[in-house]
Length: 482
Image (cartoon, rainbow, N blue to C red; front, side, top):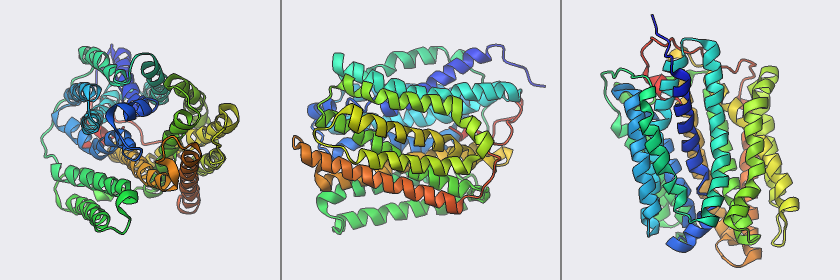
């Protein structure tokens, strides 16, 4: 017989705050990038590593974070993740060189990969006893993600403009300490016996990092250069090794049988291409505002607020209702096409453009597309999963989104650089490079829409499997969700 935790709503506040901060970590650095570039000596091509170092490590280690949460207890791993996040934040804030900054961001990614899956496990333990309460809790927890993205854009501008860019990392120290102090509100989850697939986690993370590194360097050393070819081949070998490991070890991070779940493959492909189109749009739009239109950090953050506010409103209040009426597939297709349309519109930016004409309407169309597609794609990936694999399906779809984000940004940065985006101070060349990146992202989004239209089975049922009872032991699959 389960016992209802009387402090569960307070505990939800701690978990939602963690989700808020993990997502904010991907957006708060955006408007600070030009200032970091000046102080730390990043080249235009290298600058993306401030973002990708976090995303690659975060995405590559999510499944391992879930497994560790299962074995050692979710509350313990949640607290450990915050300690790691604080260490990474201090390292990134104190960095005096590009390499140290990237290392700090990677350490932050490790912390995020421990925090996110353990938070989901704790939420299921707190509210799994009551499906109605679980629905409310999931809505509040889910709303923390777009809220974190919105706050990150705004706070990044405030700190960079009026204090200094290291404060976009320093802010995590007091918040992390406060969160650690509040972990007593969270339920203790019993650890379990089992093994950790460290080799599999190392193979997939190293493979992704090497692939992104090769794409980033290709414009400089040449796509046909021996180094580029060897790096891409090495990445392919490491990723193939990961799948071999998953077939052979007793307790893999990702049992390959999970891919038999209906629509998991097509939904994950949609999420990969969604991330590959959306994150580069956000990245290059911010650079256009600051490097071409000469916006300051605060003004740039404020300029992106309408887009992020629209995202938050749609994701929390409208998209779920549309899913109930139309199902996931039509919304994913419509969302990806809308994102493509907004990106094509953004590609018309001019060196002498204005925010109201060149940026605002196009960015709102793109944000509408993202808001329509993101939650339906995630729910489609989970809808066919049995209860014991729902968390694993969620973890996989979050991982593929982050992988798509990193690879898309790397590829489109390479494209933008070859079209002139590396020529700082040359406004026509910069604009041409950014326009090329927007067109490339539009093509990715449109391809995603077509593939989803052709490959995904239509099904109005988009809800994941029912939550497990609160007194049931947390399975590995439950801890893998984000």
